[in-house]
Length: 171
Image (cartoon, rainbow, N blue to C red; front, side, top):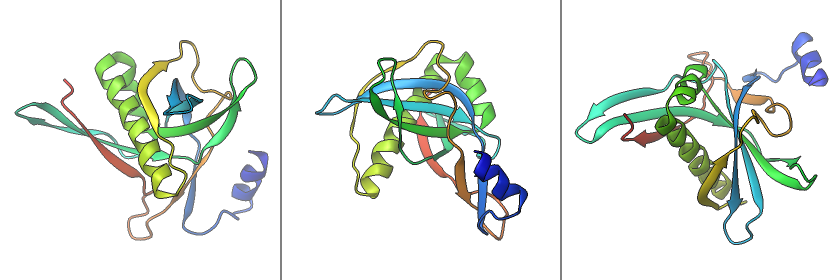
């Protein structure tokens, strides 16, 4: 972090890149399919991510949940075993809604798990996760805090580009 802060201060962050410092939200523990290895997902927030939007449909509400995902990194669990960890970042208001709505929180977690599977498959690592998960009580992020994310900036709009996923049928 100190090195990256120095780069920012010296204006040496690569052109077309913006650094995002997510705030910890909550941590999810799940397992890889087959090996049953533990995987942690730090669900975090930053105002740099687009806000969630919804529209009413005949089946309830359909949500657009823009988010960003950082690269996998290793963190130790409570027994000091290294575990693959991902940081998935939503807009700050999206995470606030999840704190007061259990169904919406579950939708965020499902979106995060699907994103991990899709993105890792795209880059040849293929991390398939079991659908069972547990939100860890009292743990905002495994490893203390989520890692900084770098985002490509769209030169026309000056906006960070993140990935979006659709969730549906949450009231």
